[in-house]
Image (cartoon, rainbow, N blue to C red):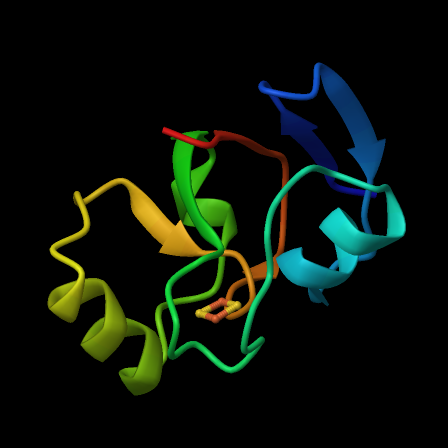
Length: 92
Ligand code: FES
């Protein structure tokens, strides 16, 4: 099972392969704010520190929002990406 590490909360949890990062965060009470849950508002912005290639490619909606909010290349929307392997992330 993929391991998901959230630096800000100092938590390491297991995820199902293909599980949405949002589901992992909510199931484990990670302190990530989720607003729309549809890739539009950008409140769930996270920075991937390790394992970026273990997340699904950004959807067109995610790409558009990341562009609008001028996200850095290592940032993703937690409500849009799916976990496919070990990932470490933080809020910034
Ligand atoms: S919760 Fe709105 S973009 Fe992720």
